[in-house]
Length: 270
Image 1 (cartoon, one colour):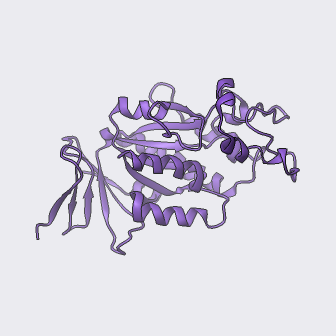
Image 2: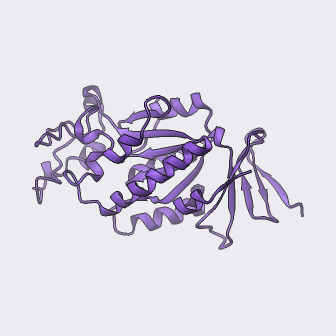
Image 3: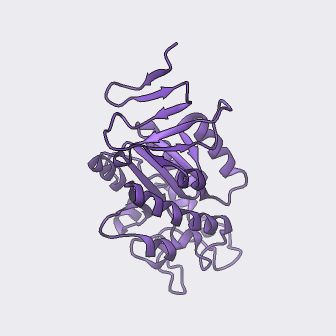
C-alpha cells in the first residue's frame, strides 16, 4: 500500500502519510508549512498535521467581558484559557496565521429577529429569579447595570474583548467579526463566513468560550461547510460539567483535530 493517500476533492485535498502519521492540510502551497503534534487521536496513535499559514486563521470566540470578566461571571477556567491564548496569538503572528476575533455584537435590528430558542438561553432570569446581580440574565439588550451596558449589544462594555486580549488585538492586521447566534457561521452571509471566503482561509484553529457552546457551534458549522477544524484544547473552556471533555473527544473523532498551546508552541516551520 502506498504510504501517501489523498482525501477530499481535487484541488482541496488532504494528503495522509501513513509512514510518518502525518496529515498534510497545506494543499500544495509553496510557502513553508507549519507542523504540529496532535494531542488526541481516535486511533490511539499519535499523529501530526501540517498547515499552510497563508491558508490558516485562528478564530478566537467570545473572550468578552460578559463571559470571563469577574464583574459578569465566575469563570476561572476561562481566565486560565485567556492566558494561554495570549501566547497562542503571539505564535500565530510569528508564523503568519491570520487572527480573527469572533464575538457577540448585537444591533437593535437583531433583537427584533432573534429566534425564541436563542432568546430563552440568555433570558432565563425572566422566568427564574437570579442567585445574584452579577450573573443575572434578563435577555439580549437588557441593561446589566453598574456601567456594564446592554447585554451583548455591539460596543457595550460587557461585549468588549477582555482587556488582556483587547490590548493584544490589532486594528491594522486582525479581523473583527460580530455574530448574532451561538455559531458565527450559521449562514453564508455572516461576517465570519464572508471574511474567511475573502481571505481564502481553509484551515481554522479555534480558541475561546464556551467550548461546548459557541466554540463548538462555530466549529461544527465550519466542519459542515468544508473548512479544516483544529481545536486548541487548553485555549478553550466551559463551566458545563463534562462539556469540555466530550467536545474534545468528538472533535478529535469526527470534526477534525485537537492540539494544545504547548504543541503549537513547539511546532516547526519546514
